Length: 175
Image (cartoon, rainbow, N blue to C red; front, side, top):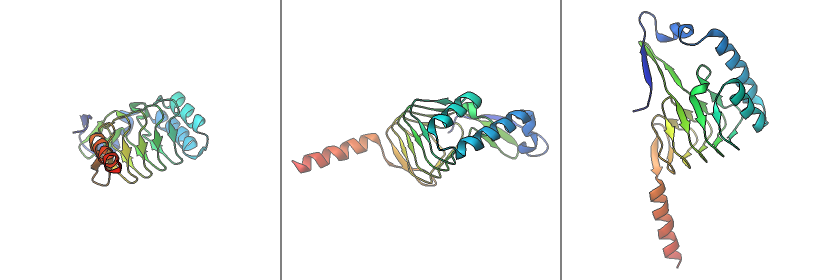
């Protein structure tokens, strides 16, 4: 299960309660910053925008491709480690507005993680160091370090241990 905190609402669906959960001007500022970052080709400028204005935790040499969409309401709940690549048009969510409740959860992406294009990361997920997320994946649960996952629903293609075993077998067969 993802690590999210649930906040029940009454009456209209939770999205109608949005400005009781996040200030309007924060959303406006975040929208402008995210739109600038989505289209800028300069990786250092993107990281500076995310760190300075959105208070995201971004590691050294991390790369956000064009059109990446971090959470517009709670970007400060996103952290990405060193030397990771977030692929084109990936969405990273730290919130879910549902009918009777909304949920918030930190998203933690480790070091040297590769996230393929058009993926969606849901709130409350931890992606371990060295993980690989195939393009178009819906990441709805934690990804262990070194694992290769893909699909919708997301499935494990191989783990770090399976890869090491496979590489060991290939090396033995070459000898």
